[in-house]
Image (cartoon, rainbow, N blue to C red; front, side, top):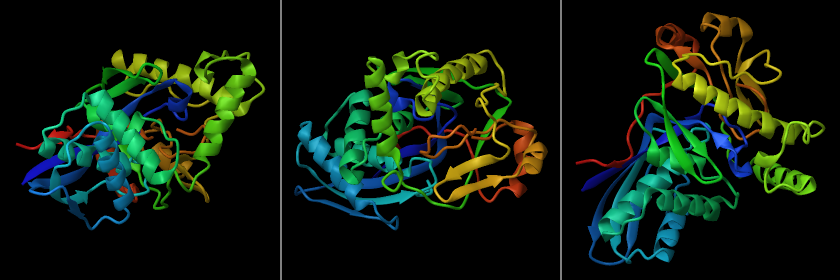
Length: 319
């Protein structure tokens, strides 16, 4: 039986820019989904998992790969995952990518990584009905140890950005779950598309700061793109804590969730070395994922409900 792995991700910066053809800076993490699989002599795909809610995603992946020419080779498999569901760490993308790798392998079917990411994005759409972007699947497939990924969401090009050696990234789990299907994601995406149409541009990536001054959502997208590029340049130049704060830094940092901010308080923030922080969920909000120096992480872990160190696991098949 072969093992196929795909990591979750955090997005260091670039909120609601992906579907506006802008820039994002995700980072694959060491929490992962694993599919252990072997081929079946018939065409049936039989999976089992202790993880709830995987069935629509598995069905979506099988359907999109079949549409792209995968032969109907059967599979027996088991799904396990250390990516917490509903925590904003892209557990669904990790599942889609790991399962897609398994289904392709047993059928001797190959797709280029970009096409495989797009196939997994389509599977997500089928499973959830939400028109999500492709950032999560790209990050899971292209995760590189010690690097973030600067993704241009217009042409889907990827530039690995080496992180300073003294940098560590943690994700603080608020303890409150969320899903794209249960959020206003689709509504926000439609609002951004409408704003671009009003301005006569292909997407908000092409808008200027002056054009969007009176529209908070559009203004966020334009200014966020600038912050992504600035953060990528700073990290590439060795700045371990780049100044990527929003226009109006929040008085608290942490995850913004639908029923209020479950957050690390300001006094705790100072104890955690006054680190930068951004949210990782799908709200259009100008908060900031904790970015800390390595020596701060060990001291701060006792303060956290859950801490996820960003040491990257490569996707793929285990030998």
